[in-house]
Length: 341
Length: 115
Image 1 (tube, one colour):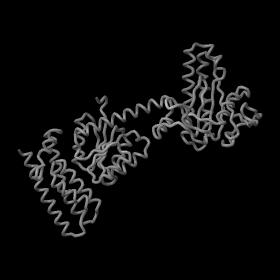
Image 2 (tube, chains in turn green, cyan):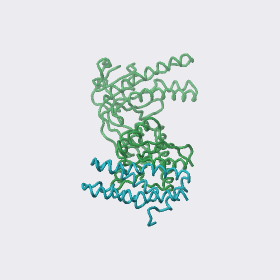
Image 3 (cartoon, each protein chain N blue to C red):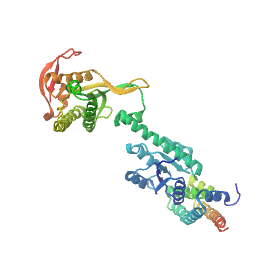
Image 4 (cartoon, chains in turn purple, brown):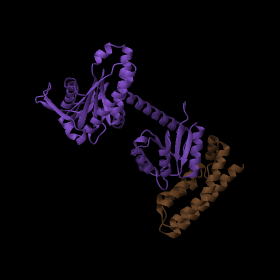
C-alpha cells in the first residue's frame, strides 16, 4: 500500500491535537513532524520536503488561512497536498479553505477511518500529479509542463513578442552516411543534450526537433525581459559547447561537426496546435519562417549565426553583429537586412 | 448521548484507536492544559483581547470534544462564537459556569481511568 513511508507535517497550536494527530498518522504507517503555528510550519516547509500538510486554522502568529495563501504563491509547494483539520465554526470558513487551495477538510475530533481514507487518497493524487509532471517534462519542457499544469490544456494561441531560433548540423546527411546508425544516434543525443542545456540556461524552450534540426523559442511561455539578447546568448553558448565537443571528437579521430543558427525576433502567435489527442506547443508567424531562412542562409553566407534587424537592434552594443548584403528570401516581398554575429 | 458530564464511549473509542496507555497520557495533557486555558479566557476578557479569547475558547472546545465532554464543549463553543461580554458580571458568571463544568468533566474522566 505505502511504498515509501510518507512524511507529513502537522500544524496545530493545541498540544492535545498535535499529540493525537501524530499518534494517529504514525499508527497508519506515516512519519510526522509537528509545528505549533503557521510561521514555524513555513520554515519547516522551506527546510525539508514533506508529502502532505495537516493544517489547523485557528492559530496564533500565523493562522491556517495565511499558510494556505503563502503556499499558493510558492511554486515549489504547488504539489503539496493540504488537508485542513479544524473545529473552526462556520461553513464560510471551510469554503474559504477550499477556495485558498486546500485539498480536503476534516472536522475535529478527527475520525481515524476518515483520516486514513483522506490521507491515502491525497497522497495518491500527489503521486499521480508528480508522475504526470515528470512524464510531461520528458516530452515537453519544464515551462510547458508548468504552464499545462497551471492553466490546463487548450488548443489555440496568443500573440506574444518572442525570438525564434533555428539550428542544425551542417552536412549532417553526408556525416550520417559515413558512420553507423548507432553512432549517428549517439551523436544526436549528445548534440541535443548540449543544445538543450544552452537554450534552457538562457530561458528558452525547444519546441521542435526534426532530425538534426531544432527550433527554440525565447520569451514564451516563459516571459523574458529581452528575448533577443537571451537567444543570442544561447547561440553563443551553443557554439562554445560544439567547439568543446569537437575537441573530444578530434581526439577520437572523428570529424568535427559544424552548426548554423538563425534568429529572428518579433510578434508571433504561440500556443498549442494539433488535435485534442495530440498537440504541441509551437509558434507561427513570418518571424518563424525568417529564422528558418536565416539558418539555411548561414551555409550560403559562410557564417555561423545570422540574425534579423529586430534582433540586432535589441542587442547590447558589443553583442551586435556585422551587416552583410541584404537578401531576398522566398516568401518575403522585400529584401531583408541581415547581420552576422 | 450521555446526559452526564462526559460520554464514556468517546474515551473508550480513543483508547481503542490509539492504545490505552497513549489515551491516558493524552488525557493527562488535556487536564494539564485546561486550567491555563480557563485562566487565559479570564485574562483575555480582562485585557479585552477578542482574538486571544476566541483562540482559548476554541482550544478548550476542541479538547473537550476529543474526550467526549460535550457539555463543557458546548459552553466553550458559545464563548468562542459570542466572545466576552462588556458586562463584567456576565463574564464572571460565564466563567464560574465553565469552571464548574470543567470540574465535573475532569472528575468523571479521572474516574474512568481509575477504574
